[in-house]
Image 1 (tube, rainbow, N blue to C red):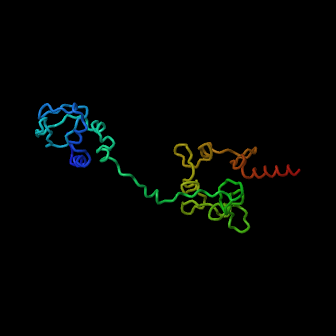
Image 2: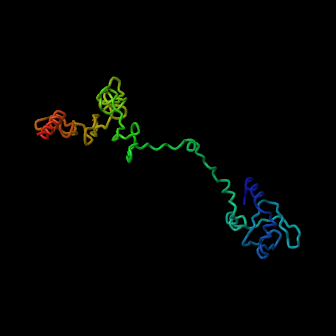
Image 3: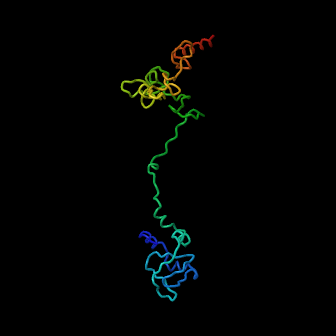
Length: 242
């Protein structure tokens, strides 16, 4: 059995001497029939390198011989060294990994909850959720609307503009408005218009018309165009007052 120099160095520092190993064996386990032969035993002794002279029965030095042995791992498991790791395990054992980035970064803080007693919603502004006053209002004087972008409401320009040069429309996705490629596209092959509903643009069946009889405008709110939606809301208010 061939061993490289690293294994030989390991055995030289780890394995017991041949005499101590032989002393562990019973007399029946180790029988020298000839100077160059060693009877196979239940606990065979592997020869680590050439030039080891086994003693003969009369005490004289015999010629070097090679002992028959099992596979090395099997021998190791049956030997007094079974509690030690195999040399192959020591040589192949990977070095422990250290995640410096993980240890250097502190854990991300938990989101703050609303300061209102008993509220479990997340705080948005001034320690409060939106329901309990945690809203940032438009910076425009006397405007009661909530700020959306840049400290402004949508009415006063609080929208992120399209990145297309000269376009002031609101961003839908990918930094662009619907007209310049933002938002979801119509699923009809070759159509580049924005999807209105059901994955289709208005030209291909997306969207719906105003529910008011005779109106051909597109529905914007609650099934009506903006004009008829306002009229419907006003009619409900009047009926409630009456």
